Amino acid sequence: MLTFETGLRILRRAAAALLLGVVVAFANLTPAAAQQPANDAALMEALKGTLSGRVSIPDEKSGLLQQPRGREWREMREGPVKSFGGWLLVAVVVGLCAFFAWRGRVRVEGGLSGRTIERFSPTERFTHWLTAVSFIVLGLSGLNMSFGRRLILPLIGPDAFAGLTEIGKWSHDYLSFAFVLGVFLMAVIWLRHNFFNALDAQWFKDGGGILKKGVHPPSSKFNAGQKILFWAVMLGALVQAVSGYMLMFPFYFADMAGMQLSLLVHAVSGILFVALILAHIYIGTLGMEGAFDAMGTGQVDVNWAREHHSLWAKEELGGARAHGDD
Amino acid sequence: MKAFWTGTVAAIVIAIVAGFILKAENESAKAAFTTSSARVSSN
Amino acid sequence: MARMKFLLDSDRCIECNACVTACKNENEVPWGINRRRVVTLNDGAKGEKSISMACMHCEDAPCMAVCPVDCFYRTDDGVVLHSKDLCIGCGYCFYACPFGAPQYPQVGNFGSRGKMDKCTFCSGGPEDDNTKAEYDKYGANRLAEGKLPLCAEFCSTRSLLAGDGDVIAQIYKDRVARRGYGSGAWGWSTAYKGGTGA
Image 1 (cartoon, rainbow over the protein chains, first blue to last red):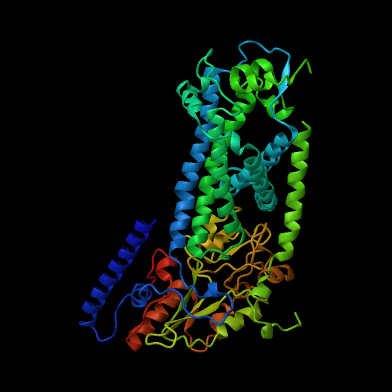
Image 2: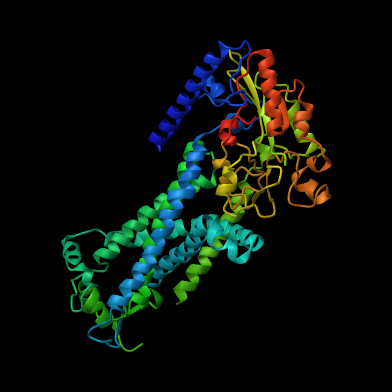
């Protein structure tokens, strides 16, 4: 963005210089100034970029007379952010469909045993769903702010769409607190399970076991892929919270440049976050047999546990926490 | 699935509480961008 | 068809704020919201200039481009207006506007900053012309009565011109030719692609 600004500034100065040259040439021919009068390039040049001044209004922002960066912000948001972001999401959905078509559902190869053990406690599941439900609404309302005008407005008309978007914005702003609390609780209960170790390197080498049948790299409570997700969520939530609260408190912490940057960061990071969670939802529902139970009832099949989280299962079963048919 | 419903309800409750608190805190343009001596009471 | 514009002759503006007062009164603009404002550059120093700014009713209006609910529209006269019924008060138009035209009733952006308000070129809004509903939401519709914006009508030095872009550009051009100097129509190179007009 800096080089673009500089480029524009150079262009404007060049235009002004050219204009002055023309003025001087004409002034020598006719007594009256024959410069192109309605063009303010000379004025902008004379002011040398000081585009803010004194106002008698208590609102300091009124003193800013012109902010050229708004144009670049608009072009960035309407251009690369929306097109790149939009197509990225499409690519993720298409990619997941293609993967499912090729790999199918990852089955429990030993077959379901009918015995279960507790994978996630009620507290863990509550924390997950508090965060997840908030995220769904945040994600949808957020995507609507970027893409709704193009995709949904033509379908339902301006009045319904404005009403929907308004509700979306209220939900987005207020559910953010539930989401932030949820992520904080996740950090509290799960941080110690998400540090990386040598086991994770092996897990990655085996492709997580997802690409081929019969490959089941050992894993503790969370496998390496889940650990990556954990840290991505921590980082993503932090970025979204900081940029989001800057947006909710406009000009409290940031000036115009800061606000514009916040919006771009929030949009881009939000889209990436949604893409990541789409994959997470896929693997936790359609992608893997027996996975959803972990967060649904909290009880997972013993064979599922042995295949996908062998070390964790061994610990749990050793503690005699297995249940019979539920 | 009880955890799902308690999670959902908790999210909604937190959102509503946050809403009330923030709305109470929100400053109007009238308060923020006028000086007290300029505010005539007729409006 | 006329293409309405404002032209501010910064060499004539004396910072009297008559334009600001006229606008506030004619449109019953709420407290704290300023559709038009006068900004003084290099205050007290050599080259001091005052510029009255409201909305430039841009050609490729950035506000219109970024609005998530597409609540802006352009009249046949080239005036950029918006619908307060559709507006969700997100504040994006303010980030995009080069001139700071959009104003909001609420300072914090919790759910909404309230309905955006801005200069309408004294041309009202989507409601039927010169109805009470239109006046309550958007202020006066002078254009529908064949009148020009009150800010320009009130300008004590005829620094602020409002009307058809070609006409006022010509007035300014003649003025500049007659007096021998003129710094340019503030904001025109940003707001209009053509830039020079006449």
